Length: 231
Image 1: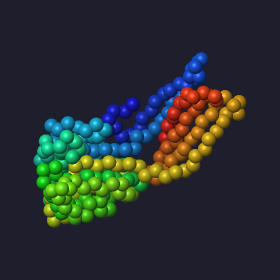
Image 2: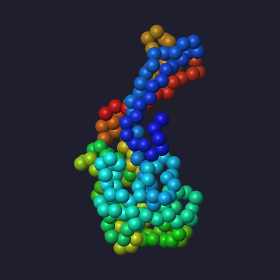
Image 3: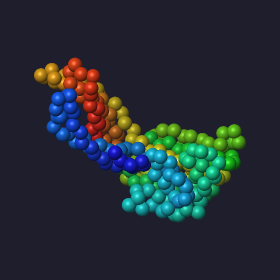
Image 4: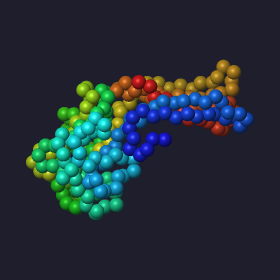
């Protein structure tokens, strides 16, 4: 199992058992295609399932970062129990964050807001697409979520530009997901009638193919779920 916040290739091995004996081992290769990033000071706790961005400049080793250092613009308020909304990076002028991603289509979600005060007008542009357009939070609605904004990567880099909207833009966290489309589904039974199962396929426009399903001995309520990814 990959650690929280991991994004990239992974693999696992398994055996099926019919109550009497194990099957031959099988190995599944897959790609974890969700990158979740929380913008925060270095001293703040990292939310489960997220990677921390503490304002550092882009590095190939990390795979993401800012055009110039934003470490001095990260804040922790200690005002809300949700660590994703208690920390943020802010900018009034334009500041650009870059993430290395394979070419393809993605869905990007961003959350903006300061838990202690209304801010804005705020602006967030992802690969040339407005996710947040001159939006101002209020005392009764301190956060703004722009969910599943469709963007296309053509040069191996996904960019997020904040600020420049006439006020202070506050970026809390973001999530990047592959944009998968259905490619088929079926059920099947082995020729010797010993095993049954099904599969459902999704095609990622970044080239990934994700297949999920199960295998089960006929007449048994036990099953083995599987995930296969290729690209």
